[in-house]
Image 1 (cartoon, one colour):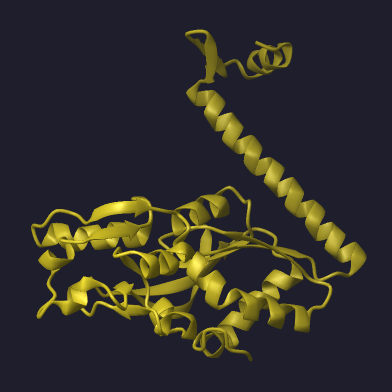
Image 2 (cartoon, rainbow, N blue to C red):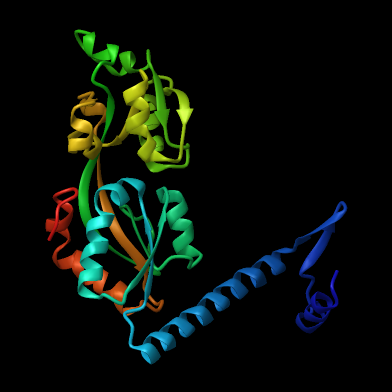
Length: 274
């Protein structure tokens, strides 16, 4: 145990670490202190960013977390629009699933996220920017399309590629089968790289569950086909989410206003332009 930790424990009058076997771990008080220290460090970093933006007159750096599907179909156009309006802006993107994005936002590693309709409350602000549907899809040549009638049960006769269990779409589709007293899909490939799914199912007889955009976009329309079942059609909304009280550089504020005012038009046409 280092001398600085001992001095801190002495000043606070409480143990911050404890020995577990040959190692040490944080006590409950230590975990609280570590969490508060992390938040303080993030606050200091935000102050430094804000002062730097004022001093240089730049539009600033935006740290943006984005779902893979939104990144593929909309992020290039969003970036082009931002850089057109604010040529000095800097954009740092993190592409991840909704569970990871929520953690990054809570830990202040990103300024805002474009994600599935947010469950965050209290300290967060969210604006719905797009409505979408996730559907079951397969390659055009999948044997499922030779069947006279496709049912939930018949979907279970084929292997799947799905996102990890913590991802919202995976939870939802597995919940559909549970509600109908059926076992979950046979997941032969699990991947957090959702953008791999269309290519994977083009090359295999796997089923996937992801945005309909992959089927309707010119890149996929010749190779992919939706499996049309009402039970497996998931309506969903995508939100822009950010912390209510944190510093947002001018470019981030611009993005918020852009998506509020022009977002529906921008996001209604994948790969389109304003």
